[in-house]
Length: 345
Image (cartoon, rainbow, N blue to C red; front, side, top):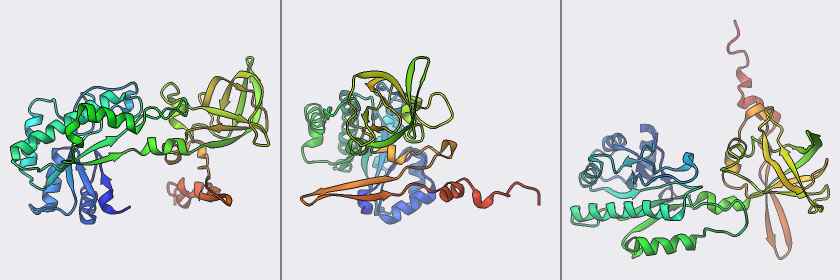
């Protein structure tokens, strides 16, 4: 990725990180006024080579998943625009820094309705117009509207779509799309979630209290959010037999369990699906994006290998994207080279 196509947008950037980003030409969204003061010291009144913006919190409320709602009244992200005096201070900060040319907002991701996302974008657009009017020129030339298009984990309908979002933006914030502003987006999960499937073998099949349980190798280390917050992050699971063919049979309510040593390590609980038996396979759908990135090392469970495929007229070619984690790598990651660090000499 070219530096100019990269955005540094953390609420806890260090001075060293800011210095490196500005030197490389990476776009920087300052999270707060203290961070702006750090950037001031680094650029020393000269216009930086990097695009610099400010993240604002429109404080429009949350969606159905509170942990992913980033525009609430007390969100940790950005400058809270509805706090007393904050909006005026943002305008002044921009006017005092002619090189600050961007505004950024992100109201949330999964669990947030498109209408609420559009309200957040509208707030940032309105602020950009206010700053430009006060400056007497088009100082704010780019609006970073974040990402967060919700993913439909329940089906393959692809709803909501990017077209749905674009239609709402054109309806409610037409000035943002009339060519005067550059746009930056961050549609990571919605681009990649459907491009991953976790395949896991049923190591054992048992019954407890009359309920069938398929014990697999995929659990909290693969789908941490699903295990700890199943209502917010449910995943579909498809059943395949030992030959890799779709499993026939009537739906049977069963648990699909992972290998970790606590009772809640379940990918699905009391889920109706064809009965999984020893040697079968469970396919956990829609597990691209964060499921690849957010491995959980509890119980020293290894990171799974990732395999991709390319389909051409000549057939399908499989490739290793990331090899499985080895035993030696687990030991090293756990501090194996310093095993005697706390022992008496």
